[in-house]
Length: 167
Image (spheres, rainbow, N blue to C red):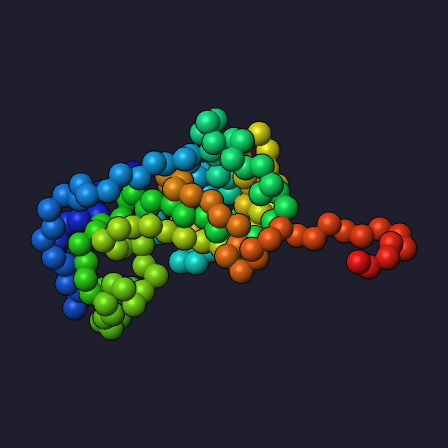
């Protein structure tokens, strides 16, 4: 999918890259694959929208039972590996307008460790796949982790029916 993202010849004005040895100091375990409508970076949105298209987080079968209880949440955090991203920029010009920023001052996918994170709306869970809205990554992106919304430490309260006393 596309050319190498580490070509020093494709820098924008004022951008700066560093020479890096291949990364080999951590091991991540991908738990599945993300399916989105976007196959090329130029088509991928800059930020996901909760009213955006439905996307799928397809978990490897060994992780299906780890989803128990997740259906009680409206919003989940998705962490993914931006495998198509270059990893050597320390200054970037995200809009090609000559204005530059340090990599850590941006939410750009171009980072030393290209971990993406999105807060998404959980639409439903079907046979080990989560249907969500709000992603902004390419089709086939490796899935790292799923967590309930960090601001909602407990699941939705069950709906009360009838005239039940409040305890």
